[in-house]
Length: 600
Picture 1 (cartoon, rainbow, N blue to C red):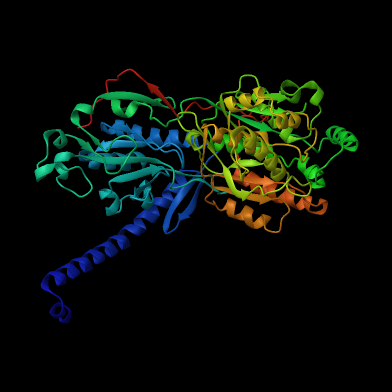
Picture 2 (cartoon, rainbow, N blue to C red):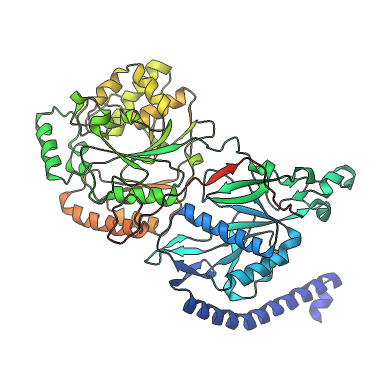
């Protein structure tokens, strides 16, 4: 009573309602929690491979999977949502989603009038699975996530404008492969007449809704095309996502202006320095060479194989499903685990792209100068060192704009001034030589290095520089070992030439560098294993002391096996193991109109 006397009547009533609501929620939780616990125990008995996982305060189950790629997970999550909507007879449409950064995710639009039907069908269909549902906030975060198997949903999910439905997928050691960032979103679209003058939505002068707006579908959040679809624009069409035809509207079926529609290949360079024959050949030429660079740049660590390539290819398959074809450039070597006949990969020998009188070569700069001679390579491709890994899903738009312009990973680190010096890092010397080339041809000064990430490459740039017969580039092609006279053709030179000629722009690449054998190596690996927020990382073996190599190799071997636990389609299969089918493009458009039930 004292509280009521101190507060206005309206405030007292609000406080009473809030107290009543909290009591009701507390009572519901007390009654519902034991039932949910029983349902989860039953789920663990019926669905093998479940493990408890936590995302902050949200407790779920993840399902242990036998194989995983981000593209296949997106396809499965989409199929799950489409199947339940079709089973319920609920019309739906594909909503355009952003291309570029972040996990690829499909979005389905449904009229808000079907909300109860959708939730009821999902509860029936997914009750015996490990599928979760959560509310997607304005910032993209997922809250109130629960399992459909729990039974009753929290009230916040019943009212959420956007729901995410998916599965948490785990690797064999319980590592999270896809969490709440993946899944398929369901947006509940409302009609204009139901919105009135709600803040954030379209209104017309005089607070009177135009007829065109009254019958329009209005999105609960932004998308790349339009948040309002008038009735006249609700013309049905179909797009194919992977192999599944999915209904949408004609305006949503067209490719976006910045969507990459051209093919993108990947090129890896690799050498097995542990091969005795290769090591002997390298030492024989090294004894006759007049090396003018620090010993660390041509030492054994530069050629030591830690099986990085195997895991680099696994990371590519897991997280970059857009890549059309992979080319592996080697010196008459093939990794013992590699299946050279596997679909989607071609082994290219140095003899196929380098002049005969430049062989043998032990210099990555020389090899990079001729990658554009690979037969059949696409006009846009990515160049990887074998110690560069993809850490999470990326799309082609991460590397290129839809008009073909490359997005370049410049480093904040500087090349320095003055002449090249034998004791400085090789990228600095190569960058200084590149600076002279760019200054001579374009009258501009360059200052920055490039990151140790995938390098977007333009065939037109490499061919143009070769046709100009640039002396520094020609010398680099014949530089058997690293030298202070080299340029870095696929990174500093290509990137700055492309930038100077309007064919590239700087871009942000989230990246982590790990130097093998360094004091903080294990700490950096632990952060990556815990899901550090980066797109790429590099495990670089610069000059690891001989005494530290075994421990470093053991640490990175364990890390990489946990990070990328499943063989890629490029690896040889054991007896009785089926080869993994190669996935298709994420989205193929079917241009003809389709008889899709309109959304009411």
